[in-house]
Length: 313
Image 1 (cartoon, rainbow, N blue to C red):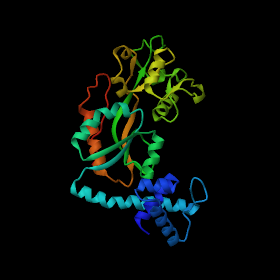
Image 2 (cartoon, rainbow, N blue to C red):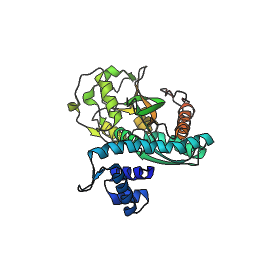
Image 3 (cartoon, rainbow, N blue to C red):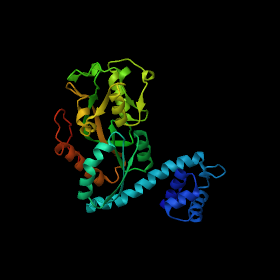
Image 4 (cartoon, rainbow, N blue to C red):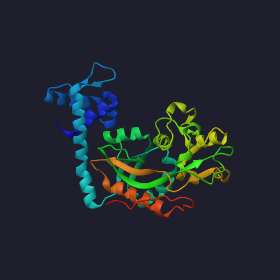
C-alpha cells in the first residue's frame, strides 16, 4: 500500500470516473487503474463498484476513503513541518470566501498580501458556508473566511473581526425618520433577505426572531446579492440589513438611507477557518496578520467600530 495509491483512490472517489481522475492526477488512465487494482488485490476487497455509472464506492470503500483522506493529509504534514522549520511562506494555497464577505474584504487585503508574500500562490473561490465546510473536510480548501461560530469539531476558527449590521431604510418606511434604531424595532415581515444558503440571511433571521416570533413563510422577497436588496429597498419594497463594510461603497444618496443601531450594535463574527490538522499554518497566520492589520489600522470608521482582536500565535 502506498500514499500514491491512496491519492488515486481519493481522485476516483471525487470524480466518480477513472479517466477524469487520471487527468487530475496527471497520469495515464491505465496507470491509475492498475495501481487501484493492485491495492484492491492487496486488501482483498472491492473499493469501487465499476458496474455503476457513474462509479460508486462500495460500503467498505467509503470507510477506506475516509481513512485514506486522513493518511494523505497527514503525509502533507511532513513537507509542512519542513516549510515551517525553514520559515518558508509560499506554495499553492486554496482559500474560500463567502459571498457576503468576498467583494468587500478581498480588495482590501489581496494586494498587500501578494506584495508581502510573493511566493504564495493564492487560489481563491467564492463559496457558501456549506460548500466551504465540505471542501475543508475533503482537503480541497486550505482555509476560508466565513461568518462564525460554526460549532464543527473538525474545523478550527481564528476571529479576524466583528462586523456590525447597518440598517438600510428607504424614505417612506416607518423607521426612516429614526436617527438610530434598536433590534426590537425590526419586523421580519418587511425585511428583504438574501436567498437560502447565505449565512448572513440566517443571522438576520435569528436577530429578528429574538424579538419577533415569525416563521420563514412570511418572506415574499429574497435575492442572491446585497446589491439587489438595496435596489429592491429603493423601490419601497422593504428595508434590509447590510454588513458594515458593504456600506462604504454605496453612493451619497443611498447613504441617507443608512441607520445605525444603538449600542451595543448587533454584529457578525468573521473568522479565518481551517481543518483541525493545522496544515500550512504559516500561511494562515500570514493571512490573519495582514487582514487584522488592515481592519485595525487602514480603515477610518466614523459611525461604528469594527473590533479586531490581536492575532493568536
